[in-house]
Image 1 (cartoon, rainbow, N blue to C red):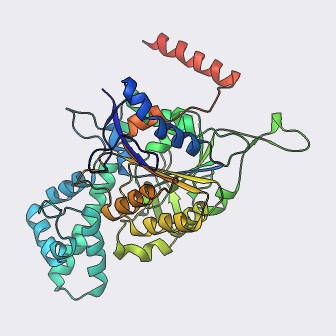
Image 2 (image 1 turned 90 degrees about the vertical axis):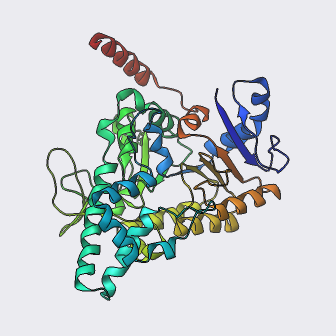
Image 3 (image 1 turned 30 degrees about the vertical axis):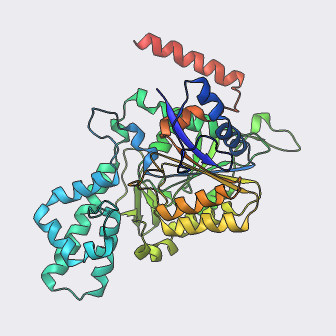
Amino acid sequence: MSEISYYSSESTFLDAQGLPRKIDLDSSEGHEGLQPFQNFINRLVDAENLIVLAGSGSSLTFNKPGCSSMAPSMMDLWESCKSLDEKRFNEILKIVSYHEVAGKWPNGDPKKDIELLLSLCDSYLPLKNLSARRQQWVSDFLKSAKEKILEETSFVDKVAEDDWVSHNMFLSKLGKRTPKQKRLKIFTTNYDLAFEVAASNTGIIVIDGFEFSKPYRFNPAWYQYDIINRSQASEKGGAYLPNIIHLYKIHGSVDWVSTDQGICKQGGKTSVKGNPVFIYPSSTKYQNSYEPPYLDMMAAFLDALQKPRTALLCVGFGFNDRHINNAITMALRTNSEFMVMAATKDPFSEGSSFNAEIKTQMMQAAAAGDSRISIVDCSFEALSKLIPNRHKPSPEETLLSMFESVIGKGRM
């Protein structure tokens, strides 16, 4: 049975506490209760400027019940770093005063936030107020933990072909826009390559800020370029390809490295030597947001949110990055044509990882009649199915689909 919970200014399926009740999508009552959601998602998809903000929840859809986790959660990364050397790990927690800073969950359990821990380590090292031995411990742990996280998040080659259905469907429905609409912009805090692989699966071209020639160097000017089909172009204008998206990886990527020639992207069998490029979102890491390529990513995000007729779809994002939260709340205050939908798992439960302050603000605004805000309790897989499909396949795409189907049957 498929269920979702939905909260907006039009919500009708609420309990005595004013919280959303589960809607059974397969029941007649569910179809009626889902109408406000469908109204909102249709407005969002039809917006001139559509932005997707994807968090770790969008990748966790690869994890299947009863199987070992394919995509790591934040808790998985904590345990993986702890397993490197549990005794030394506990020492590091004491050295950087982790528990004093992190605090506890509402149920009294200590928080396990690997991003905060590594940020604290980054903050302690430049101070050099530790003993030489402890300084080395923190430095070694930071290096080994980052290597472990890169290893854990480099999982896309292990994903079975059938398990790409949700990502493929998501990009197929949202990635191909009409000529009157702006290119889909996907901003993600994930380091993995899930959206890149899904784009390849569905024939979508990704502009990610890197040059097309090797070595693939980062150049934000590429976001200003576009691609046309010259064979279909007229003298008055070009025939813009419909299947192009812009991808912004706000916190870096498993295939980015820093070299003397700038930020480069790994590609093919030829590897580029350099230091990994990825950061951890926390209040202690603001300084990294003001360095390339992160500065370019955040600048693009801030600019996109202020455009008229803009819709933001947050998928699997828990709103635990303050600099991103501030940009979104500012857009809600200053851009009257801005709308946002937050879709993630269990946002309404008490022990949810969804930011409690942001949730309260959004629900209060919606309850007061702000029709620009909605929160949805559903998985990335369920959302991919519920998103309306505005794209009509061209004759070429239909023939390609038929050809691939025939080839696929021939290989069986």
